Structure formats: C-alpha cells, structure tokens
Image 1 (cartoon, rainbow, N blue to C red):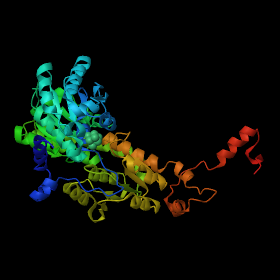
Image 2 (image 1 turned 120 degrees about the vertical axis):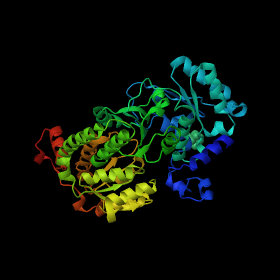
Image 3 (image 1 turned 90 degrees about the horizontal axis):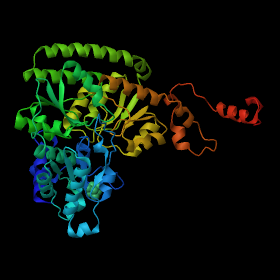
Image 4 (image 1 turned 45 degrees about the horizontal axis):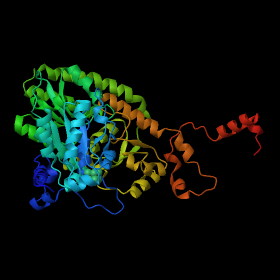
Length: 502
Ligand code: SF4
C-alpha cells in the first residue's frame, strides 16, 4: 500500500464525526472497521466499489476505472441513481489492462484513455479510479492525473481507493476525500443566496431527491450541490459557498461534512427524508440552521405552514392503507440511517416492528431506534438467513423489508418481501415517497399470489415450509382458487367446467 494511501486511511479513521472510531483505542482504530468474515457469509463490496458508488451519481463526469475490466463490470450502474440531464455517468469507461500492462505498468494506457475520453466526450472532468491490480503494480494515478490535468486543461481527479484498502464503507469515505482534496472549493458559484444548502450522502436513487426538491423549491431553498445524486461537477466544486450542510446517509460521507465545517465554517446536521415526521423535522432543521446563518426569520413560519399542509395531505392519502396495515409486523433488514427512519415511517403506517437489524448502524442510529420504539426495540445485531427464514416461516413477521440479497429467504418462506435498499425500483423520499412506501407494502402483503403458493403441493413434499405457515398469517383476500384451470381446460375442450372429467 502506498504511503499516501496509508496516510489517507489513517486520517479517515481519525474522523471526529464517527463516534464508533472515536470510541476505540489507538491500536484498535488502526485496525480499521473490517470484520473477519464468517465462512459462507457473503462479503460486501470492496473499497473501490464504495468509492464508485459514492461518486458515480455525479452525472456529467466520465468515470474511468483503471484496472481489469471486471472491476468496472461489477460496479457499473447497479443502483438506479437517476439523472435529470447528462447520461455520461452511465457509460462504463475502463482501461481494461492486460498482462503486458501488469508487467510494464499501465500508466501510459491510462493517459491515452483519458485523452480519448476528452476527445470523444469533452466532459467537465474525469474521475480516475484506482483498483487492486494497478495499485499492486505501482501505477501512480495521482501523477498521471496531474500530468493529464496540465496537458488537457481539465480537472482529472484521482480516486485512490483500491479494493484491498478495506470495505465498501471505507471506500465511500476515500471517494469523499478525493472530492475534498481536488474538487470542493475549486469553482465559485455564479451567485449565492442566504438559502443555499448542500445535501451530502443522497444518491437520488430512483429519483428520490426529486420527491424532496419541490418542497425545498416551495420554500425558496436552493440545493447548491447534492453530493452526489444528480450532481454536476461544477456544482460540487462550488459546494463550499453553501450556508448549511445536510447529511443524509448516516456516516457514509461524514468526512465531507466535518471537513467543510472546519474549512469553511458550514454547520451540518444529520436528517432523513423517510417518513412523515422525519421529513418535517428535516425541513425544520434546515430552516432553523439557515436562519441562524443569516436567512430572513420568516423562513421558519413559512416552513411550518408548508409542513402543516403537506402532513395533512400525506395522512389523508395513507389513511386507506393504514386501516389495512395496522397490526401487521415487519422484519426490517437494512442498515445505517434507514434503520431508524424507516422504523418511524412504518410505525406511522400502523405497522409493528418484529425486528430490525442494526449491523451497519452507528451508536447514534441505535439510540434513535430506542427513542422511537422504547422497550420494544427488537434490535438484532446480526441475523443469519436461517434465523430470518425461521422468523418468517413461523409467521412472527408478515413482511420482510430488505435488500435484494435476502429476498429469496422471504420467498422461500412464502412470505411477502419489499426491496428497501439501494437497488429498489420505487422512490420512498419525502411525503410523496411515504405514500408510495405504504402503497407498496400493502400491495406486497395483500398480493393474492401468497394464497396460491401456500396451497400444499398434491405430492406433499414440502411439509417443512408449508405446514409451518399458520393460516392466520395469510391475509384475507379474494383468491382466484384453482377453478380458473378448469375454466381454461373447459374452454379448450369446448365444454362447461362441470363437464370436465375428473
Ligand atoms: S477487490 Fe480489487 S479486483 Fe476486486 S472489484 Fe475491488 S478493486 Fe477490483
């Protein structure tokens, strides 16, 4: 590992905003946050993957991966991060190094690739990602990027987070460090207002940011820069002129918030866009901090008026679903900020929490869950797929909300499942997103397919799963039953269904 990378990692582990690291001894902190994997357990993404996830949503930039083609293949566009303009971020650029590059070094190939991108696409900047192989053969991407910046007169940004540096979470922070070192503060905005904010750690998955932006627009609050969802290079580069920073995804890019506070005195807070109450709290916190920073005081009153109107509308729209969902139990397997804000959102819909995983949650996240759920906080540090399966099979939960990797556990137990993680297909941000979330949970739980798949097979070979699902767990919905098969057969034979010979 190069000296500069080692120093950068040590710096990230010193992060004052991360209480988990601050709570560790000096020796422990040096070891980092990587846990020994259990044999058979799925490993999360690598540091390169984390850096790419954090930065790829900057949409007008060319993201060039310096390494074997598989690194780019693994990380390409798997998160539904949406753009309102340029689609360049979705083009996979890689130097695709070969054996000769490994022997002689891949720096020349990297330089040529940068030149080709600039000639063909002319982006405002190129982000160059280091990977394991190119780091191990000693390619100095910082030097190549500096040379290319001078030669082409455009910012070429090195993102030094090779996979072996650590886990995905560390990669998020190393990606953020690249922005701090080379991007933020390098461009002045055309104009500023007392209502300028940055949103940090929001990736605009499935367009969630666009569910929140109209609320800020209504208050005259400008998103000077979103890091990094639907972001533009020049906006990120001018982020240092914002009055307030909001941290969205727990601690994934906390280093941007803390360092911007140190360098430019921009205060930050951690908020959430999920659920009615949390969305309102977030608007209040933004307004309060902006007023403290010099915005006119009437912003507070205008914010309260907007909250009252939007909350009333949201409650009215979820009332129908709430009546159907009250008392249902959800098993929530997610992490970070979602562990507490989704808990609150589910409770608003009348849903009880059968259990929530807190594996990726910070100490503060856990405190917030306790605050919301009191003594009923069923927090689970680490849950094996077998335990999840048993919980669902025994109908201790009516639905599982998790990422795609766990979906088959729920489906095997023949229980409803909803994707709540980064690969989701529905946006759940703001008041609008809350209605969408509740609607999707309702659709999942009351889908008639569950009655169909729980019918015992005629050959009776699935006793374990089937026999254990109590009938009480099956929602009462009109099911088509098996009669439709008789109808189809009768039509094909030109007979009435009752005439079909058994
Ligand atoms: S671990 Fe290394 S080789 Fe694998 S995807 Fe990450 S950067 Fe590429």
